[in-house]
Structure formats: structure tokens, C-alpha cells
Length: 158
Image: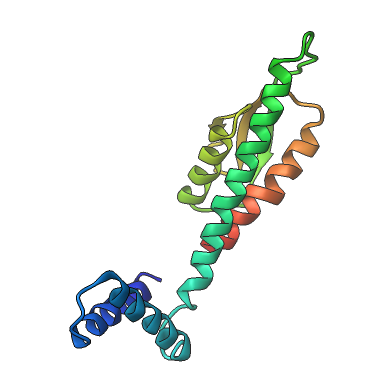
């Protein structure tokens, strides 16, 4: 992916210099020509076309923003309830993620979402221990995290 980005930047700068127009629109035009060339020549360039991964990264960011907003609304409802029925607790999340980077990203996304906090990671990196402000059903919480964050992280990194 990094190789393709560098090639695309080189094409954009070459376009800008060859057209003798040293402006942002000229650079953007060259960048778009570079994307087109890389797409047409993707058979000869190693790795998959990098815009696919960029789109998946954008989807992960949008998913995080959506989850952040919805969990903020849940916390606001819980805080303003006169007699809240809150059941805080810690549950174990088995994860299919392998690399340290993936596990760290998942733990950070969970911790940045209000109402949840990553407490620890098991020694064999197969489980995360998560504290939640309100747990109705731990199995539902596990499925929710696996179907949102873990799935999106695996799409980005694999």
C-alpha cells in the first residue's frame, strides 16, 4: 500500500511539473491521473489496489463516530434517569485478532467509546477484559463488539 501511495504522489508531482502549473488543482489532477494509472496497471503493481484499503479505513472511522455518538446518547440517558438501574461489570471478550497493532486498536476504540473501558489483555492475546458501565447481557455486548469494531479492524488489516 505504501509503495502505491508513493508512486501516486510521484505521478502527481510529475504531472504538476510537466504542466508547469504549480498549484493545488494541478496536483489534485495529477493525483487523480495517478489513481487511474494505478488502477489500470494494478496487475503489474504488487499488493491489492490501495484505495480499497483507504475506503475500509474511512468506513472504520465512520463506524467509530457512529458508535461514539450512540454510546454518548446512552450515557446521557443513563445519567439523567432519576433512579438508574445500572449493572456495571467486567466481561471477557474473546478476540480473533492476532497482531499487537490490531489488539491495541480494538482496545483503544473500546476505551474511547463512553461507558466501556479496556481493562486488560490476556497473556496469550486472545482475550480482552472490558469494564462496562451497564451490562444487560454480556453475550450481546460481546457480539456487538465482534460485529462492529473487530470485523472492521480485520477488514482494514487483512
